[in-house]
Image 1 (tube, rainbow, N blue to C red):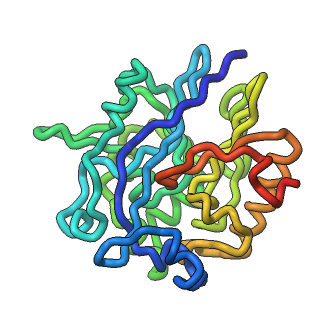
Image 2: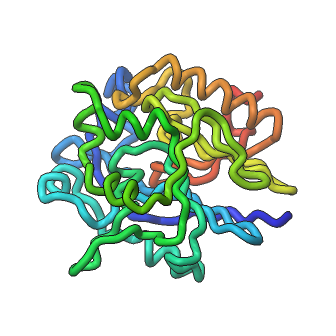
Length: 268
């Protein structure tokens, strides 16, 4: 069966550099990562589009176009590029059959809803949205530690009203060759995506490994709820890439999208 994998450019934004690298000292990453006057680094929003004969599957939705003035001031985002990038591949909003949300932080599910000026609606009105149940429950009822990460009740409300979402628990094959793997780590219900085509094997790890720098087992983001779970998820990812001679797809790296297993020392 033919499976086509594409990178979708949903724009860029700037985030705190120190938070991005967690406990890793600036002395290590500072010479390699460009920052602005507010000590922010630029991240890309590299979404994943998986095209099958009967399905068009989008993984994550980017920031969307409903950011508050405060969020715009903090993150300095580029314009919302998701619809344009899809259109360049001939994909319309009504063509998308499935949306996988790796987790529910604003830069991954902000594009679930689009503001069209006089109204707001699901960006992909015919799609089913796949979310880990534990992630949904945390986003709906966040504790004090996570409240700031899930400050977007409106998106969840409209999605809930649509009844077009599927809450899953654990790993699931949602299509032939497309598997969701629950990892936790970054958030309580983070999930990664494996794509097994007749000729290639890919893993889209989302924020478990957001950039090339985060390939190191020792580097985790300060946003990760559990460094231990993130570490275990990386071990699983590298074992699968080594086994399948696969390719890693980076969701936030401005320079790198694909990383072959042969470039990763943990796969040798």
